[in-house]
Length: 144
Length: 133
Image (cartoon, rainbow over all chains, first blue to last red; front, top):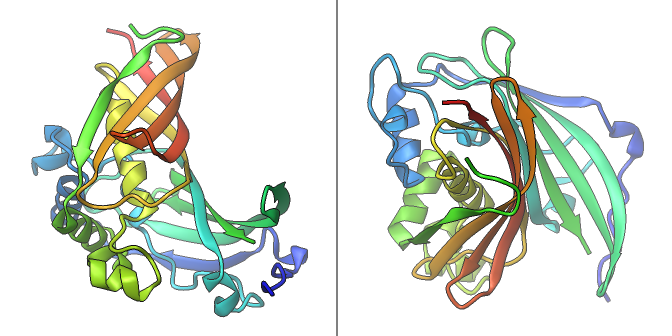
């Protein structure tokens, strides 16, 4: 018999559970990421005053905590990465210090052909040292 | 200038095992399933897979190829099946809405990543700003 859908306290929605500050972003790291993405645009590949990171670079920011306290990691391991929504703000430049703030954004159910599905949306808001929005990243985890 | 209903120029790519491994290293996302077929099989997968974030990066490249002076504002992706190395991929998109602005226009696009044989792997949407001139 399949495990029941995880019961997650809805009071956790909206609460910050992690705040991770990165080391200053280096040009080398931005260029390495751009190359790995297959980029050919010089603005992403050539070190110098015009260098910026690719639009998806902020998704490389890692949280120290992946889930809020109160949700066991073994529960999250049962989930599948169903998708991601990324709103992109100001560009990242070498030397930027990025802060990722994690929160539980939403929990909702859907009924599919295989039965009831539960979605848990983890949000990370990434800002730079000027407190400008760099990205809002919603990760949808799906449980069946 | 792109208009409602126009196709975005396709992006075709076959990811190598080494490209996926290099992507996850550069993205701080190292896990055995992304590094080798053996690592993937240990996780009960058919072999090595690419992370969802790499599909987002392909969508970003697709959107930036839509026109000159494109600024990607939003990308949304739904992961439907595994993206695997050594499989010919086709990323494509179509403009579904155009909003004129004083300094350019916002385009909404439907996006798709599929195999050359037509298996849908990732679907999504994107918003780009196209500056005038």
